[in-house]
Length: 334
Image (cartoon, rainbow, N blue to C red; front, side):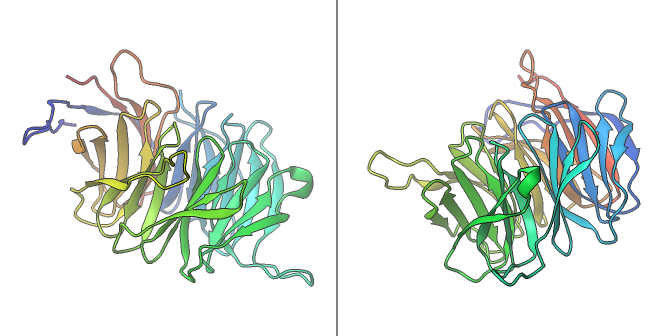
C-alpha cells in the first residue's frame, strides 16, 4: 500500500501499511474484531460465529458453535483471557479464551417477575473483570455481574434521560467511567462509582457507531454516520466542571464511519468506514496519514495492544463486509 503524506502545512508524518496475511473463516460479514492482550485476535460475524485466531500463524485456534443469529458486539478483558459478546436478539455470553468454554450466558431479553429487562445491543467489559455494561433500546446503560457464578445479574441502571437507542458503550481504561452513544448522535459519559451522568456531548448529527478511549482515559474518539470522527476531552477540573468537550474533528471518509480504535501509545487512531477504507490518523496533527482500500465495508478495526517499537506505527487488524480478517503493519514515520 502507498502511504499518503500529510500536506497543507501538517507535519510530514507518513505510514506505509503492509498487508501481512488474510484468512476467510466466516461465511458472512465480520461485525467486530479485537486484538487481545494475550496476542490473539477474536472476531464475530453475521453468520453467528465467534473465532479466536493465532496471531503468529493467522489460523483459527478455537471457536464456538455458530448461533442462529448474528453476533453484533464484542469486547475482551485486559488480560486477553475473556471475550464478551452479544447476539442480535440480546443473548450475552462470556467466553474463556484459555479453556475454550463459555462460562456465562444471560438472556437479556427475558423478563422476570421481579424486574423488566431489555435486549442488550452493545456490551463492554469493565477492566476490573467483575462487571459489564450493556445498552440498547431504552438509551440507558445497565451494569451486570461478569462473575461466572452470577453472570448477567443486574446491579444498576444509568439513565441518559433520553429515550434514544443505545448504539455503543465502552468502559474507560481506568474503569471509572462508561461512555454510551445513541442513534441520534449524542454521547453520554457516566461515573460508575457515583452512578450518575457526568457529561452529554452533541457533537454529531447522526448515529455514533463506535467509541474508543485513549489509554490514559482522558480522550474519547467517536465515529459516526455523519462521516466524521470527533476527539472529545473528558477530563474534569478539581471543581468538578467538565473539560472542553469536542476538541477536534477528523474528516476524510466519504461514507459512514463504522469503527474506531486508538493506538496503545495514543499517537494514532484507526477508523473503518462504509466507504471501504481504513484510515490511520495522527491525533496530534489531526490528519489522516494513511488510507487503505479494502473490498467491502469495514466494520471492525483494532490495534495490537503491544506498544510499537522503535518509531514504528504498530500493527492492527481490520475486518468487515467480505468476511475476511486482515493483519497489517505500519512502517516508521518521518
